[in-house]
Image (cartoon, rainbow, N blue to C red):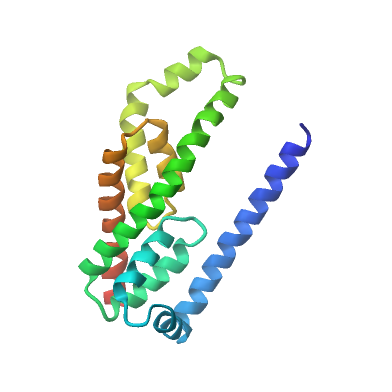
Length: 188
């Protein structure tokens, strides 16, 4: 049982390091001609494939910085609405994988936490009107922003959102977020 906190601490340190590394790589790619050469080498002339795969990266904590950098690059030469639509579809695919895994893990987390909280208190918090109204709004804002989607998806999984509602939310919110990034890229 004592190894669990140590293992969790190591995982958190590793994750923070990976996020910092991702941001550093994104900054380096954006400030150099390497990004242009890399994108032309990997995707050739297929902007659609590039925007779709970049959308998948937009959904993850570890790759969102790099995805934003690539979307800013695409904004120089492509229509922001096209970037957003294709990238939003890719982000939905990325979110679907995350949503599936988080939903399963969330049940186990709640069962684990039940031991430490009085049931009456947990039920009051989870079923309060404020929580019922705020959780979807906060989750939607997190998914639409360039902030990584995992926390917002975790919130949506907690309220047992149906998959077709999740699809609509994920696609439109990510598309909006990518559109904002692309429009920002047009201005700089």
